[in-house]
Length: 363
Image (cartoon, rainbow, N blue to C red):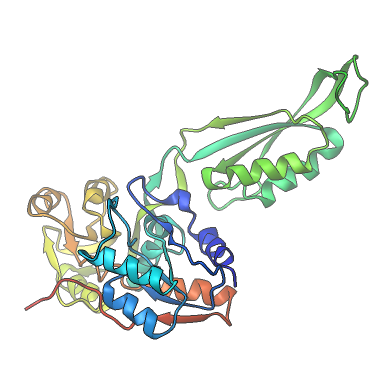
């Protein structure tokens, strides 16, 4: 299949606009041949992983952590990243990454971690800001349903667990068509009054262009009158971290064992906390910055990775914090890729990397 077809499917679930400003998700290395027949799925891309892709004759490597994260000034043979890039180009292997967009999206890494811990009633911990827009369009009465449906089909109108949400107001629009126009109603040079419906609906940023294009294509007017307003409402359908509840309250010691078993972790680092655990907040990868937010939402425990000494100290004043390791809170990313791609393209060859890319060893 074409690379763009595969990427389009991935980004339907994990939109690039979900990624954090510091991130570098997306297609990082393209192929000369735009066709791909197989892909190797991995958490990290190391020189050993690219050798694995070469040995399996994979056309593409799909990773969670981006290969290129910081700007490169030169490509020599002096760093692992440079070696990987040179090998990928030499063997015409494409490289694609879905990082914080996968973390934030429904069905991504944070939801998978909730699933592994069997949490219930999970919600986004840190909802996305400056991500919602209101689209307002003026439509003649007989075409309102067609335009409204076009907006909904493009993804507009979702509020929480409700979809097809809009507000509709009847009114009268005026316009005068110029000499170079071809008006749908009215006559050139004459002021025209038309009974119209004002349709208002909400759309997230990653679906804004699609919604506007669908709306314009469905609209009968030659010149479509519409407005787009940025909203300050939080977008609760996506964001970093999750917060949910255990099926039942358990002791701190039971919970620590429970987390180790669920993640198959060698060890856990932790600090603070009450003697019993019920409400659990989490964020895969490096999420120490969300510990205070977890505390304000009355979580009993916050699970993430890469905590520093003083971050443990500060967070432990409010709740129990567990550092379960960056690798162990995200190693299942390749399984998420596999299920997503295999469901849509069951005949496309997928390989799960057999390598343990965790750089940390425990003695």
